Length: 421
Image 1 (cartoon, rainbow, N blue to C red):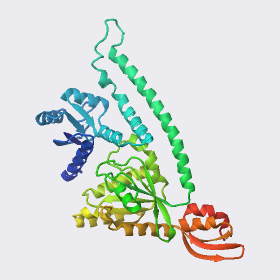
Image 2: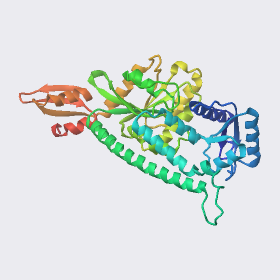
Image 3: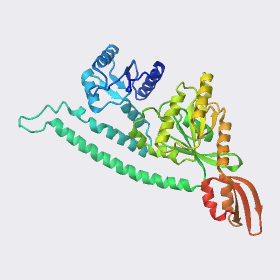
Image 4: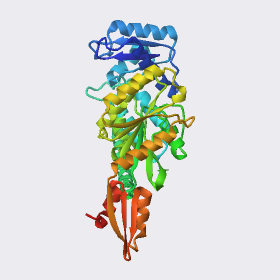
């Protein structure tokens, strides 16, 4: 059973939007093996400290759960540790919230050591204030002596110390892995090649698009958060120009902040990229909401001002073309940093050539022409220009040769000593 809570108590949430929110919660729950058999939308004007909702609504939720014979209630809003305990005592059922569901999904999807540690850290931080729930049955087993502690209280202290020690160890290991990743990132930045990052709502088809563009051997699956670890592949363009593209973790509404912080390794790729490809599911009625969610997260991580190419993916599945045209106009009006919008299908290959052309057009426009005088023995620099930029003219002399070309900023830095002012 899924329960969606609108904490602001206003009438802004239309019935169709509420249905879509509950559908998404059902999809999230299904990803961890929980099948939704019913849902209930509750508007909360004043959140109750005890159960989040009022006593009348709580009774209604309990009665519906008993009628359906469910074993678990999932709240779309985050429950405090005490609210979660109160609900489980009140209903006698397992009660979890959206936060826990997303943590469980991430735990299932993590494949690298760093991703696994990041998920574990988020899980430990989530569990720490909830320790009392596991040992309340022992807290009543106190001895007769005044002031003595019960076994439950002792066990809570032991568990808390063990959790804190593990949190410290995980953070230390993550710090070491972060330093290794920073070294690799610096080496990658030293390679003078423009980079792009594919961003977007979860299940928009980013991995499929990366595979279609580059032939990358990445997991392509119709499920939420299929990709947690960044995958980077090279994309050859015309005229010898090349760029690298990186797949990133999908965004979702109410993504827990500890997971936004935890997955900075994949989100950093968006911050460091020269440009972004914002992938949207053209067949999804919630396209605009997904667009705004992704833009919000990009702003939070400092990537909100990056040049953006919008890729409307899954065009082969789009049916409401009028709604899609409206959404496309809204995206164009709202995003000043958008350089182009392209309709594509990673499944059929439609529009991929146009998307590649838009990437190339952006890169060429971002690269201002300059002239470089290179010694005859520095053909490695000439090869670098051909590989990363666009050569406009090349002239030879007896002891040097001059190249007029458009090159990305990283290549310009390498060629700075040879520029002709």
